[in-house]
Image (cartoon, rainbow, N blue to C red; front, side, top):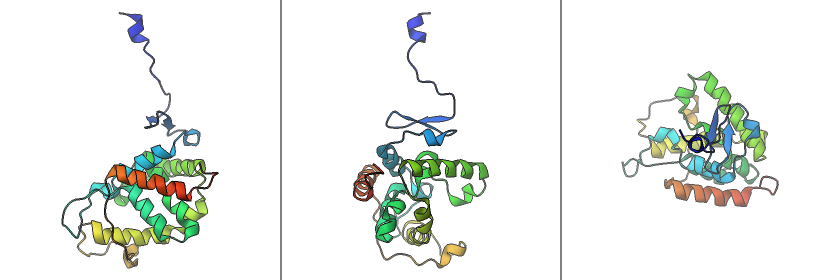
Length: 197
């Protein structure tokens, strides 16, 4: 066997790592060392379907793709200006962990622990204020109520404590992943401080 064939340069990681679109690696065992770019972030969320891809336009009755990136961008427009950056960046864990539905997450405590560690590391990387991420939660719940009303085949049955959340008076027009990523990046450029870049 030719030694040149077996010595082809292959990057081998020792831990549980993921290759990112930028060519960098994300190590789930050491998320603090991540070299995630804002493009990795935006495209990761733009190609992640909210609600596990089970969206349907209540206006048209047709299935639609609605990304986590668009969810974040919309939320950043609905919160008070001082919380806009945190709202845009509040799904940091989903960049590398995906968007599992809440019922499934509730059955996977280890996953939740990993996702929270990844989110905390990525938020530190992009200088997202953790207290501001907590502060946007009531707005996030209202957007969830808006999404359920417009983008889920919901029959009106109660789901729990968040059922009393008042939907926002906005119309959600789902975007394709490329548009969602580009719009997310434009919004990031507007909101990010020089320190976050």
